[in-house]
Length: 177
Image (cartoon, rainbow, N blue to C red; front, side):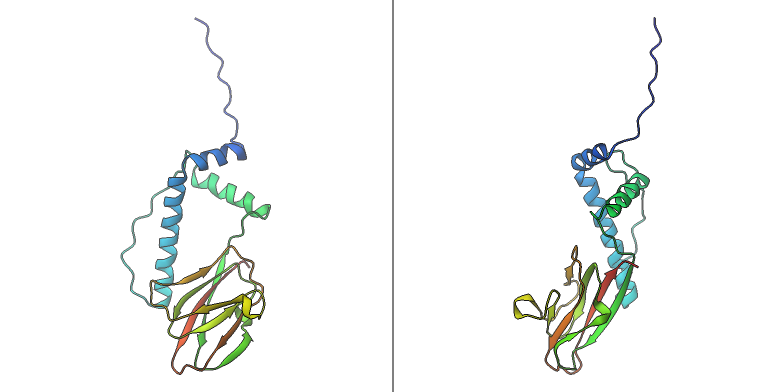
């Protein structure tokens, strides 16, 4: 009986990785949901909102792809501009007791994403320009209600509001340093 020659296993190609992702989207979505849950717990900790005890973190494998390979894939996406990941955030509290008319909020500029985490009043948010067609009206939000604007290259932010004594909004800016 002839001995079969063992062939070396080639490094998976980007196409192989994509095919693995598409066949096992459920695991990827599960991983993303866990990541989002952990981020929300971190935000609750930062803002003083009580948290639930954390679920133990386990290694996630998607279609035979390890976390290390997933990180390499994400790095490739970033390299070619397909994906931009934030590596920092800033929590900005806006005092709605001061009236504003399309006032630029420079601390929220140059963001990859914004999350309106808490709002006890109302205001209008402008991201692209200060024109009325670009207005996003934000009403009072009670956690877990939030508004997230992501996958958007936010260069400037303007806010308009009437004076609302004692009311405020917390906006989280996610950005890359």
